[in-house]
Amino acid sequence: MRANQKIGLATVLSMAVILGMAAAAQQPQQTRPAQPPQYQQQPSPIALEKIAANIYQVKGGSGANCGVIIGEKEVMVIDAKMSEESAKQMLAEIAKLSPVPVRVLAFTHSDGDHVNGIAGFPADIKILAQEETKRYMDEAFTDEKQRAYLPLIKTFASGGPEYDLGGRKVQLIHFGPAHTSGDAVIFCPQEKVAFLGDLFFAGRDPLVHRHKNGNSFGLVKVLNSVLQLDAEVFLSGHAEKAARADIKALIKSIEDKQAQIEAMIAEGKSLDEIKKFYKVEDRPASPGRPQFLSLAEVIYLEFMEKQIKLKPKKT
Ligand SMILES: [Zn+2]
Image (cartoon, rainbow, N blue to C red):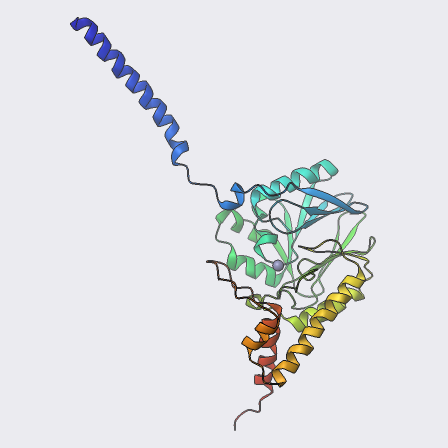
């Protein structure tokens, strides 16, 4: 009886040890931190839309549309998606198009939905960006994995370099401050295709980031410069592919709003009245993200600054 009890106790103890070990083995999984939201949500799959011979627009995944230009020696990717995972999925899809390796990453500007997937790119990637864009990325990146790519960024100021991917030339042009102060237009002259990043929006007002020295008058100027390029197809971060007429329509809509707001200011209208007129709703600020102002607010503030500058100095 005692022997049986002993055996029974020993069996129970050893089972407890085994169960304990199993529980311990499971524990790291149970205590693993929750995945960040962008990994939890299932974004739409990456899809490549052919635009011209060896030029594609990348849709789906997380973040803004990206671009792909395939040369004989190198492939250039334009913008990096919003997460490392999404960038890797994009690169896997690009690898199905061509055996030519992705060697260059060019940024249209520094917003997170265009640059945060940088760590999904190969560790020896060449990166091209306007100098202000690199500065904003340096300010925004806190993740060490992302920061490791900063020294790889070759910057340009204005004009911008011409890059040869092998049989395919690409121009990177900074026309001046518009959506941000570091925007680059990436232009393929042979195919007449221009990647505009967030210089173009359709069906909504364009975003002008005052916190990154963007400017609505600058945006009109830059879009007019874009029309000087011998381009027919315009790709952007958040819209369908556009034509010259779409760019002209956007310029007109910004100019109309500028003229309207200038008139309202002359009539003595307040910012609140102008916002009410355009049905601008205040969106609650989210932590770690700057408040995006509406185009009407941006234009109002720009006119106010001009008035302050025009006032004669007190002697
Ligand atoms: Zn943007």
